[in-house]
Length: 366
Ligand SMILES: Nc1ncnc2c1ncn2[C@@H]1O[C@H](COP(=O)(O)OP(=O)(O)OP(=O)(O)O)[C@@H](O)[C@H]1O
Ligand SMILES: [Mg+2]
Image (cartoon, rainbow, N blue to C red):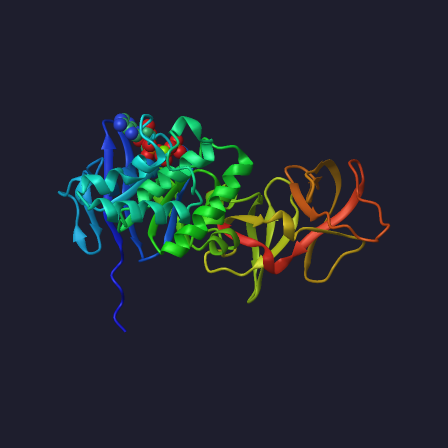
């Protein structure tokens, strides 16, 4: 089988703005039909990278290819892209139909073809009956749908989205994330989605590119990134995570034993190639892996502590736990309705808690 050529290929991309090194050596391949998101904190270079793919910025170093062709010298309008940006406003004086038709008109397509394409895309994106409205007569979510329709109606090779849902409230945002994902699958369009919101990236993506300081820190599926964060930064950036700085005390074939730096707690974790006796490491445990129990459990790290704080959020309750100097943890429990009469633990309770040795992530110390 021949490997299909990636739709978007970035080779060693660098970009500086004066003193600021915005992008520092990005290599990436986005496959045909894939939805990839750029995720990272503010200023990590997401928008800059996207703008270079779009041709709105020029890389200082590196090559940008779309469907195997070098794009470095190709102007934006010749790259066959669809773009949706948070501030990429609709034309206010044009109707929904005219806004969506704009790109097709520029290409001098025949009137009948344009009408058919606009009608089809409006159906796809649930804007039927709104053709004659002006943008000011639409809700925020509807406006972003028009922007999306306008971006995909020309059948671009690649769709670029930069925080397109940033201006919407949480509920609408979550609804639109699922809609965009379904639409993207249905149309099969190769897409790159920029966000600083980890839940959004997890919801939308086939693969997530986690960025920091102008570099890619980790690239993987949402589950890979969540379950196997490569560094403490990724572990903390994606979801809630408990971390313990420690030193490796003993290594065996399956397990290592570490001593926590501040609390002196002895904990066990799976063996890992970079965790040799004496090495500094950082352990990471997800809150959903921590459970409460009555007595020490075989195969578990077991800690004794006190509940310092309880946060009820409806479907979940978060328990803030303290088990000594610098040994603070967050545990999470689902709140399914049960017939159980056992009382929920509350702040001030002394409890035993822990997690299985094998779900403890061992990360290199930062
Ligand atoms: N036109 C510019 N001139 C000077 N510096 C810039 C310019 N554009 C971006 N930068 C700087 O480059 C770095 C990366 O910016 P970029 O916009 O790519 O970040 P981002 O990851 O998109 O962040 P955000 O989540 O806040 O949108 C930042 O330090 C930013 O201040
Ligand atoms: Mg940005």
